[in-house]
Image (cartoon, rainbow, N blue to C red; front, side, top):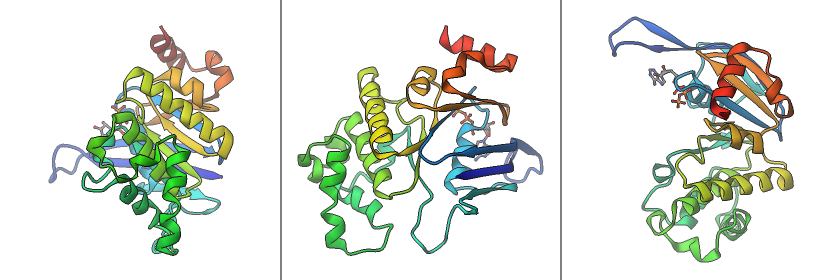
Length: 247
Ligand SMILES: Nc1ncnc2c1ncn2[C@@H]1O[C@H](COP(=O)(O)OP(=O)(O)OP(=O)(O)O)[C@@H](O)[C@H]1O
């Protein structure tokens, strides 16, 4: 279980030399059960991606803790990643000079083990995300957006982290490709018990994939609701926001 406890995050406001600070996350408390899909929705600028970066260990909170099974998220020197990520901008997520094989190997190399054994796993991950094995020697510019995002998902899975953070991971894709990637994510969740934290603006996608949804407002958690009770949210703000995006 991942436990986020009293997390606060500030950013400097008004340039490098300014002392003014903006509180971006305010007393964030929640628990994430491994294997579930927790959606995070909220208006632009409410702090979703900042929370995502803290969960990935890319940035640290000013106060509060984020613990996985009671331990710090990022264990230096172990190569262990608590959470891997897939971002919106798939074009900059992969080194353009890496083939698909090299991109997946890069993720596999985060863990110890023999290189030959790892190389033999590349086909397994390609098949796992519905890519032809012929993609193995291709470069990102030779693939469609949906195919590149599948490679990003393969890389995230290859780290064997217990949860994948998806930050607007389908937003840049065309409608039909979005559906295909959503179906892939759902299949991996149901079949392989993969868990996600799914940051999105798209409530329909959240309803399809998530077990629970966290609604954020101005750096705070407004409400967390089970997906089957989405229509019964208590807070007037959450109700209004959902009505707006579902209209
Ligand atoms: N590195 C940074 N330095 C200073 N301020 C930042 C930084 N990153 C984010 N912010 C500010 O923190 C607030 C929250 O930003 P964040 O990107 O987390 O919101 P968000 O909910 O993910 O928005 P969106 O849906 O538009 O991606 C915003 O006011 C943003 O301007």
